[in-house]
Every structure is written in structure tokens, then in C-alpha cells.
Amino acid sequence: MARIFGIEIPNEKRIEASLPYIYGIGSTRASKILDQAGVNPDIRTGQLSEEQLVKIAAVITQEGIIIEGDLRRELQGNLKRLQSINCYRGQCHKRGLPVRGQRTKTNARTRKGKKRSVSSVPKK
Image (cartoon, rainbow, N blue to C red):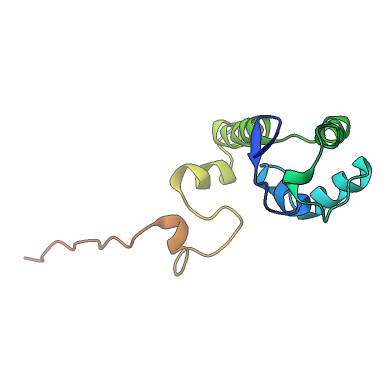
């Protein structure tokens, strides 16, 4: 397997389809990177020469694209900041509720988890 920035990408796929295996690079950004590096997007990853891999890595660093651990750390920091300033979005993240204004009376099962029944106290 080819390695770029310590991340192994599959050899049998086209390089255009292999680059999105790196966290922070999608298909659109992968095609732009390959255009700037001057690498044919139809070539298989296993057929790339060492200098082509270096060109791809150089384009990623020149463009200032944040990938893998740095990106994960930045996103985690953003969530921690929202929670620490106690804003509405931060509170929703803490409680595991939908963050972007969706309704919670019905639906939202994916975020809220399995339905828990609230037992009622018998009346006397």
C-alpha cells in the first residue's frame, strides 16, 4: 500500500478514489490536488512512482490542507469551546441532541438513542 503522510491508501484503486481515504480530503479536493500535482487521475495507486507521491504530498502541504489528526483535534477543540462557553449548540452537544435546529418531540432517534419509557407513579 502507498503511504502519504503516514496514511496507507489502497493500491488497487485509482488515485482519484484512493486519496479520499485520507481524513479531510474528499473527491472534489482529490481531483484538484491531482490537477495541481500534474498526476493522471486514472492511474492506479500502486503504479505511482515515488516522485509522483512526493508531488501529491507537496501540493497538500502548499495548499495548507489540514488532514487527519490535526483536523480531528481542531474539530474536537471547536466542540469543547462551544461547550465551555455554554452556548445553545454546546448544550445540545453535551446532551446528545440534534444541534442544527431539528425538532426533538418526534424523530431525532439517531441522536437521542434508543427510546426509554418513563414509568408513571400509580395514583392513590
